[in-house]
Image 1 (tube, rainbow, N blue to C red):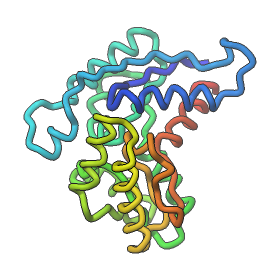
Image 2 (image 1 turned 45 degrees about the vertical axis):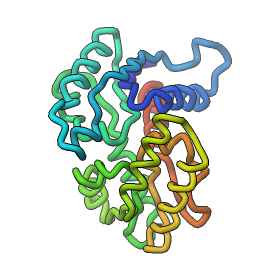
Image 3 (image 1 turned 90 degrees about the vertical axis):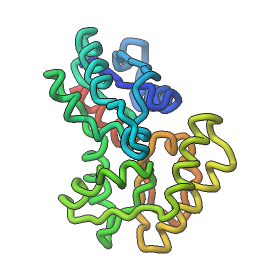
Image 4 (image 1 turned 180 degrees about the horizontal axis):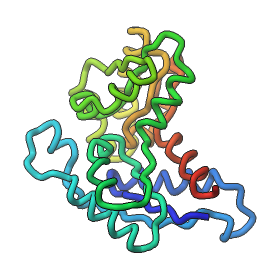
Length: 227
């Protein structure tokens, strides 16, 4: 069984959530049946949104690379990062260490390809992922086109609400509206592509065939750690 290093803190609740999902995903009879995890709950990683959307000058990449080095020094044999937007900096992490890092974006795009029947996939995520095309390239390699919610100000407002207040009726209403709008534009297959939205997956439209990118990462963690 391999020890898994989690680059966490982006945000803190999502890091706790992935730990809970990993625990729930393992059929355990005793403590020793569970995966060994090393978690860096680093809430001090510079803001990805400020760097990508607001012209912030503090690059998160060096902090993420340092986290990876610390986790590997502590014995991590696989790395995983429960933050979609932070995957924009994945190359800096991979350059810093020699152990593999699981790619939540690629894993999720491959799963979307198995579900889509019209080549359109809705992405419920931070406006930053659209700006940098985080999902566009991987989806295109699978013959798919990404579609994003049109009211990005509201999407960002929901993410900030979740970070500051946790799950709330206001955040759920915003996510539901965004999901329903994507369905109306032809994107019935949808990615819950922000780990803040992973806290409120029940808010997506009932007409959407939605899945959480975090769940795809959890499946890969369990598979890779137990091989």
